[in-house]
Image 1 (tube, rainbow, N blue to C red):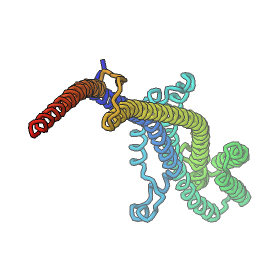
Image 2: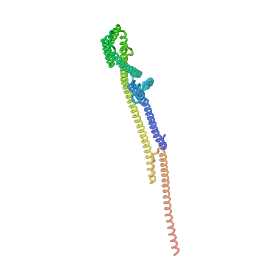
Image 3: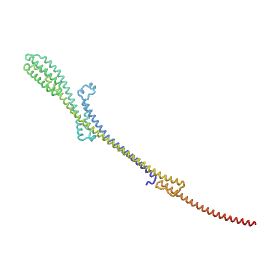
Length: 435
């Protein structure tokens, strides 16, 4: 099939070209595979990490805003709030929580974290779904607690003013025939005792302590009411006056808008706020633990993807190097074999032509191949054969010439002998004639 040197050269070139083509195809496929790996890393690693970081950052930001939110600060004058960098606006915080809730509801954790177990995934989804309502409840409890605190403070200030007025008015009461001085002193004593207990209650921070002290306050309250009823039997006018003076005290103790009720309500709202804060902290701790586990899963998934990409890159490099080595071996081997064949054929031709040029003609033919060098060898053999025929013919002609020359020489010698004889005879005749 490859009987021609040209065809062999073309074959070697085609073989090298094919090796280069295969190497290029392998390099292209490896590059394409690496691109797919990079896209896969982006979709399976980078995007989940971005989603996770965004989730953590938004939750952390919302938690910090809820923790920094102070309703008392938010209710200050605008001129004061502008100078406070830590103040958090309630409307902005509510809008942030609503936006976070919408974003969490649209968040598909399973799509960017497929390796997480379904139970853990459901737990995380539930925790995230309940986290925003807990923050909203904490925010609402802070608002209610702030309102209760403000109401209790105002009521305490008003009661303090009323208590001073009550004390002054009781000191102005004058004893009468029906109402003795000791009755007035009785009213003053129990009022002062009740006032001290009320002021003590306003300094307490737990409802249990308040109820303990209030039991003594109720005793003084009952004593005052009984004394007013007792005085009313003797002097109704004085009784009405005393009741009117002590009315702010009775209101503070018994009314739903009284200072004690407002203080208890404030303490209850503070307890609710603390409970809500505890629930939020518990949810925050649980969420933090779950997010740490998710982060560990993402790190593991990232490491696995990196290892897979590194292994793919190593395999691609090895395949490319293998193909390159094979292409080099094929190119060098084919080129070497072709060069050796050409050099061998050329050497034989040069040797034969040199021998012929030196005149050493033999009947030994040069081996004839089927390529162009075989044609040259065949032509050289034909030239040598023709030269041998010519030399043979020349040798035969030379022998004929030698034989003819010998005959001519023999005939010339005979002719010379005959001529000599004739000359002798002539001389002899002349001699005889002269005599």
